[in-house]
Length: 390
Image (cartoon, rainbow, N blue to C red; front, top):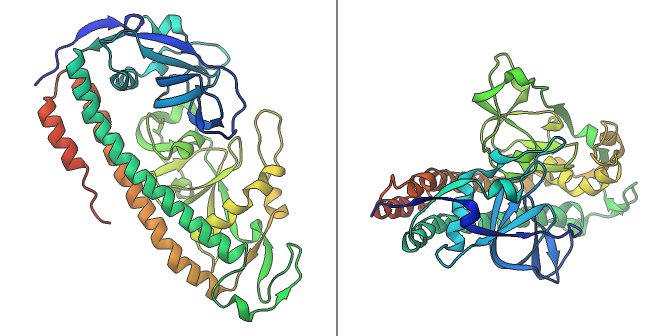
């Protein structure tokens, strides 16, 4: 069955609600959505079963869907069907395909408004077709969520193992080692306290110029891509001669020293490192897995040394001021044998999610335009859902 649709303006398809200011990072049973997804929780809700649109800032025009009760911040707009002839989940996919960031204005920072969005033209098929399309595309989201759930479990397992061994010192054989005093408190005898500058070198990203940016070549990885874990609509390098040290690959550890202040295990494929990010290169005898978890554990201490009122950053001197406990090589090796397979599985699962997302995003405009038969799209979905082992 092919899609038959009619052209409509968004003002006739959706009705808008406004977000309301709330402090991010809170707790509660209802999710709080900002311009880039969930930013916390709260004990109250304002809306239910709606589409959240990023209204202002770097993520303006981004789209999220919540079928349950939620709070939307003042950095968002909320969209609902204007009539019973529009399916809410289909509306989410429709707005995703519309790429609303294209309609952003504003001098100081990007901004989308209801007035502008209401004039955007879209193609809307009959309700039964909407539901069929939404069902096919939602199946991809379900498969992605299953893999993302496994990713979260693996991340939690690796993090818990690091804390058990290197924070609480409950590693195999810990009962036989006495404790000795150190600047970080009592630690097992034979262990050392070192600044992070002694664990690795930290290569800052390349200062790309506008003339070097385009749509071909390796993607330039910025903080936005780190937070999302994927590369999408990202400027790419047009120039040649970028030194090898700025190339990043799956499994690399990246340290965001500005704005975000966090540490990431990169799993988004080959790319080039932008400014405000370090690539972490462990010294001899240390592994990326150990350095990653040590940095992750120490991030609160790095953030405490950050400078700047609106755009937080740290100086390289912080790498000399923040310390961690380093176990003997034999203990670290036992840890790495357990954790590195988890990291490899994280990369495999992330690739699976990326492939599912890419297939869904390729199908989305074709389904809406009637270029793909719905029965054929369902067959593609069933094939894409099979995860191949690494």
